[in-house]
Length: 113
Image (cartoon, rainbow, N blue to C red; front, top):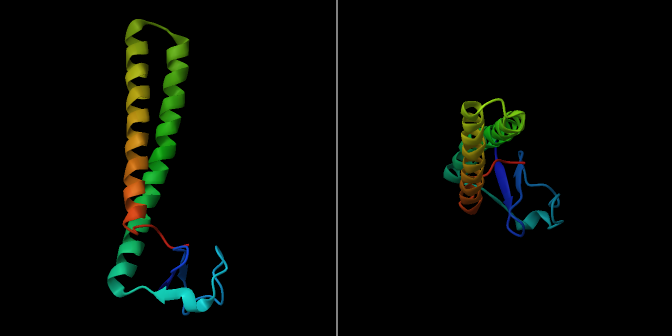
């Protein structure tokens, strides 16, 4: 597998050759550079981790929604305390994920399109 990166918009293309034009910004084929083995490995390996982060982010949103329902149910103080803590932690972890993914993007650790 070869990866080619658009030097104009950073779009990453997978294939035997660079596309005739960038599907994102329309730059010509000449603006694509083939990623070396190290960069390709970094992109491919991080794609798996980034996918896990996004899946976890979605699960944490579900946790927040469930916790909110438990808070609204207000059965007793012990239950509400658990739901409040779950909601707080879900929000905190989602913020951490966003920050981590931003770091990945700045380092070029993002999956191929």
